[in-house]
Structure formats: structure tokens, C-alpha cells
Image 1 (spheres, protein in one colour):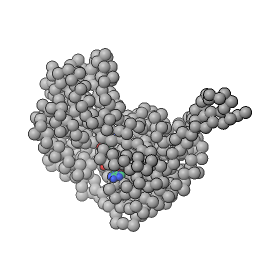
Image 2 (cartoon, rainbow, N blue to C red; image 1 turned 90 degrees about the horizontal axis):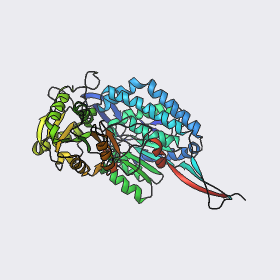
Image 3 (cartoon, rainbow, N blue to C red; image 1 turned 90 degrees about the vertical axis):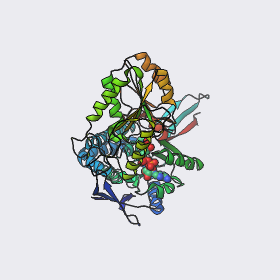
Image 4 (cartoon, protein in one colour; image 1 turned 45 degrees about the vertical axis):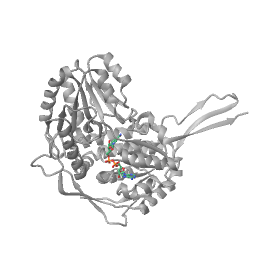
Length: 478
Ligand code: NAD
């Protein structure tokens, strides 16, 4: 059992109010962590510490900031087993998945360490040739990092790494279901040499401390990943006081399988896209449009793939699908499954796993689903896939685009011109051809279209746009 505290100005500090107990979703009897139930008071202290540290960190050189990121990357690798185990016990994802996230976090840190050595502005031609004219990138200031639970390591890191390397200081609020992991990340960052006050951690319920963070006048920017409900409120509040904000939100990601596709590959990757992490990925495949000529062959192969899934505790290496994160999430998914039973035909799954004592749900597939059904429209965030018959590529694209979301999408085809036609027309920020809808790499921009995102992008060179501001400078030289 891990006892966590807030990390403020380089000190581990307890919140005044009583703590919150967190249990293992694979075994709800097992106490995993005791968390802080912070209030506005602790948020204010964390912001003050970040404000106090920002001048010095902002004037630290890029290469010196990079050393801390590089060191953090090595420490993530050193502590990989312990970190992965903590994350698995806290939020249920399989050990292989959390371990993958640890190494991915190290790669993100190394990528952004490199940013400490790259250009920090542009030299520009001026209308007056005697002017020295340039645009210099500067830190935004204090950045609030508000993260979800489903990528307990990678998402906080892909927000904090660019924030820090470009000279900002951070107030980090992990999701309650990932706070013990969040505290360990901050501990590692501190060991890596980030000075006191550059990274501050406040643990608590979003409903209790979210507003105190978002409304704080000295928080200059908010980077948020989570639900559309919370994200849209953050956008309104940040815009009202002129703070910068970045939102990465929900998805309802489609895959399209054309009749010329490799059906084995498509079935395997559609199932992987839908069921990996028990469907709790913003980029999970949740609807698949299949050309009618291959529908029954595809369904047969999907069923075979589903049968090979072994649900259980993510600590067991033989298990291929873990529990969902919490009782609340479990109940919400089961309600969608009941809706699905009225809207389509249940092909497989459809209930909680029998004989397992935890938040386990059977991998569930519906067919004969209409594209306007609730289960084809709303984000379920669980191991549920809807199969929709499609008459043509155009019809599939049109129905796939008929969504408030536009995060990721994939197509399975061996026809290059059809793949290119899809890329041009699909409304999604992340596109895969013959791949599953999930997947991101640190060097590439990540984010969605429409209501999946505020239109900003995370990671890659795109990250510099959010985490820095420009000062455009003109110097009359003679
Ligand atoms: P959530 O919105 O419930 O919580 C996200 C974070 O916001 C948590 O830290 C939470 O404590 C905090 N929060 C809650 N209320 C708040 C408030 N009033 N003010 C400020 N902060 C508040 O989301 P979740 O359940 O943790 O995550 C699941 C959602 O995240 C899904 O919708 C998923 O699609 C989305 N997600 C999106 C991406 C992406 O990159 N697009 C990645 C992962 C998850």
C-alpha cells in the first residue's frame, strides 16, 4: 500500500482533510493507496510554489533543462518494473501495457530533452533592412496539467516534458484513479534534478479542486485530457479570464473494412483496437463499418479473435484483458451494453465476467447496429464493439463522419487509391491504414478534430505551440 502526499515547492506535504482510499480494480478488497483529499488551500500553495520557481527555471538554459529530462528518462527505465506494477494495481491495465507505457514515457522524455538543444525562435526579414527582426519563443509561465487515469504514465509525461523543457513550471493534478502513479512520477522527476517548485503535485477530486486550479489567476495555461463534459467547462473558464488552454477529449473511432482487405489482419486489429486496455483508450475502435460482401466472413473471424481473449488480473502474464478501472466505469459500460441489446444483435459477451471478483466485463460485440444507434454514437470507454454493415466506401465514410468526435480512424484495404481517398475525406486527427485506431509516437503531432480536441496538438514539434509564447522583436540597428 502506497501512502501519497502532495509535492509542493520541493516538499512532500499532507493535505488537511481526511484521505481517500483506493482499491485494486482487479481485486476490490486490496487497498492500493491512500490519497490526499486536497482543497483550494493546497492548490493555492502549489500555484504559489510554481510562480516562485518560474523566473529561475525560465532563465535556465535549454541544454541544462534537457539534462533533467534525460536523467528522468533513465530513471523511468531503472524503475520500470516497480512503476508498471504500481500502475497496474492502481488502474487495472495489464502489466505488459503499463510496462510499455513506462518505456514510452522514457522515449517521450528523451525526445523532449532534444528540444532543449533546438531552435527557440526565428530570424525574419524586415521591411526596414536596417532592423534586426526576430521572433523569440518564451515560456508561457505556470502550466496546470490535468490528466485522466487511462494512461497514468504517458499522458502526464507527454504534457510535463514539453512544459518543462520550454521553461514553464507545472502544477500537476492526476486523476484520482491514477494518483499514486502520479506521485511516483513526480518523485522520479524530483530525483532527476528538477529544482523545487518546477513541478508541484496536488492530489484530489476534480470536482473539489478543479475550479481552484482552472480559475487561479496565476495559472497561465491549462493542458487537459479527459472527458468532454469537464473539458468544455475548462474551456469556458479559461477563455473567460484569457488563460491559454489545450483539450484532448473523447472519441468514437471508426474502422472501415473493405472487401479487398486482408480479413484476418482486419479482424485481429479491429478486435485489438476495441479490446486493448479493456476499451479504455480515447483512440479505441468502437465502430466498424464492413462492406456487406465480406460481413459474415469478417464476423466469424472477429468471434474467433474474441474467443482467444483471456480476461483476468493484469498482473497475470497470461491474461490478455484486464478489468475496467472502477465500479462507476463498470456500471456505466454495463448500462450501454443493455442499450446495445435493444439496438442491435448481441454476437458475444454482454455481461460482467462470472467467477471473477473485480470490475471485469466480457469483451462484447454487437452486429446489425445502425449508425445512428446510441452505442454507435456515444463514447462507451469499455470493451464494446459495434459492427455496422456498409454498402460502399462513400457510405461508410459519410456515416463514420456523422459524429461529434474526430479523434482517430482506420481503414483496411489493399487498394492504395481507396486508402488515399479515405485519408482525404475522413474527419480524424489520427489516421491508420491497415492498422488499429490507437497508437501515437512522441515525434508526431497527436490530437483530434471536431469535439475530440480544442484544435491544438500535443507531442512532436507541434507541442512548442502550446507551451511557448512568441515575442516578436524589432531592433533598429543603425
Ligand atoms: P474526466 O474528465 O472525468 O477526468 C479527467 C481529469 O479531470 C481528472 O484528473 C479529473 O480529476 C479532472 N476533473 C474532474 N472534474 C474537474 C473539474 N470540474 N475541473 C477540473 N478538472 C476536473 O476523464 P477521465 O474519466 O479521467 O478520462 C476518460 C476520458 O478521457 C474519456 O472521455 C477519454 O476519451 C478521454 N481521453 C482522451 C484522450 C485524448 O488524448 N484525446 C486520452 C485519454 C483519455
